Image (cartoon, rainbow, N blue to C red; front, side, top):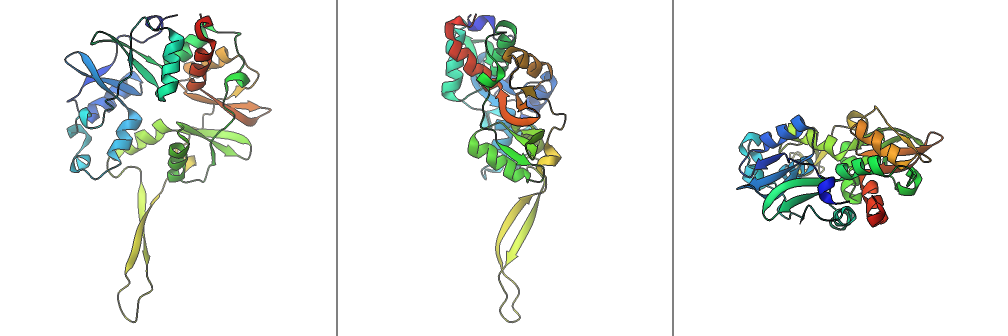
Length: 288
């Protein structure tokens, strides 16, 4: 199977001078998480919702304080594009995604943009073509990043960044009760660019000498939101003994990027689109 048989085309794209606000609206309208950035018909970058939130929320440049309808995409896009031709073998494309730790490949002929291959496309291929080839427990990741409902959103974000994951599972004991994804956080941050998610400022003071006014030692910003505030409580799970292709089909049907895996109601792993990508890379040329 070749990339051309699985890729998405035409591609939703945006010009490099287009504003962030337009990019956000395009993602919402088309229910996608990334856009290819083009100049003169050719791809020059890519931008995801998480990229937007992260780059607006870091650094001290004056442009970050502008409204998002006045900040061009060129300021926040990733320029290190990984491109492949439409004739690339699908298993090789899967290996490239895993090697570079990315979620999409831009498909080009010469300098012309003709498509995009995402982990969602690979999950769709898995669901359609690989029924009976693997069980969920063979593909799932057993190392699951979890939080309880009262953990702060700041802690959730820290765990995502430290472990390089796109979601955490909210648990009550050993039972999964919800998930929080990087996209959930990104959308919250983009509602208030620069300030980001709701926070409060705490000032810690030194003990004043005599009648002197207290002096502030340092200021700490604490997120007001918790995992429970942000989690998606309409929890969808899969059983470890289920056919992985059927799990992929359910994941796509409900627009999920990852599903907690359970046995007898207890959390034992997580199944993501990355796991389907690994499966296709492993199956190689036999994935037909």
